[in-house]
Length: 306
Image (cartoon, helix red, strand yellow):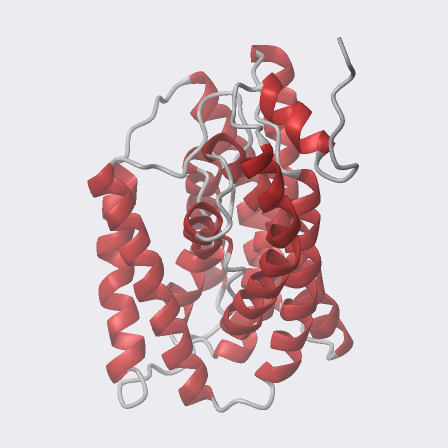
């Protein structure tokens, strides 16, 4: 029999799809070419809009992957994770140049989310199954916060909290809980932390670098933890590597530009932007819970913190 010939670029996609029992015919292969530049452009725009609010935008990228880029469902989570890890350093690089990554809030959030995501990943694999109850709770919490930031936060802004020892302990505990939830359910910590911190009286200019740093380090820790657990329990989901790299490149550029743009936007507009993002994330959580199409990983698979 003659040897099959395919275009040199999508061959890896075809072989990977056939190995996982996914569509790998000419129609599927032909979609690969336009996915890369379109995905990079969409990732750039998404990161450009979400980074000034301190959110990576990974959760909002999920429906784009499914409905626009037509990424097969088993590959969505790890491909999304590639975006999250590759995109956030762009914003962090810009914030570091502006010397805004060394604040006490950044240290508190990182100190809480890192052990939290490890504990959550272990609990997810060893103890819990695929309950969707938290997505409902997160949606119901974020929706009123988002509406408040979008509509009323400008006239009802709280004073900045006094950095007492008890307050620092409360911030660390909040970060620990959110990090644990992120590792347990594979959801983004920044999309939860940022609206809560703004509601507590922090400025968006202080919150954005801190939550973005926590999201980046939490993502790395989550990947490492799930890799170890996956080696023990078995099972794997192969990402779309080239598409993930394109998403990450576009997200990196968008994140850098978004961080640079943030200092030129007034606090009022940034609060409204964060409120809009919180409402969109809440709608995504509630839609996930209602339809049963969860973006959370299965046991011993990659997480997708956003």
